[in-house]
View 1 (cartoon, rainbow, N blue to C red):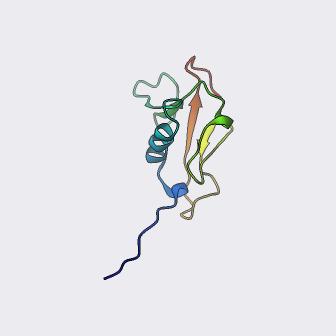
View 2: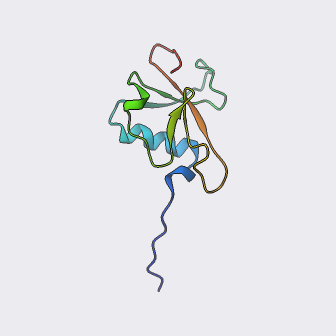
Length: 94
């Protein structure tokens, strides 16, 4: 029997899963939203909303804030990366 455990590198998570995780680990300071009507203008409909300074939030390993997005660029082992726009509750982009 193989007793080795599989460890998932957080930077390799897809954007949807990583955004849900980001929401959960920040204890109500961030809200993960699926923008079904396109009101925020997110290309794939995924976005994060917070009024907290993004530099003060907790990020999963390999994910960070840059250029108004939550992203894992240059941190994946797969070479695929995700970017999810971050907005304030007023609708203004971070």
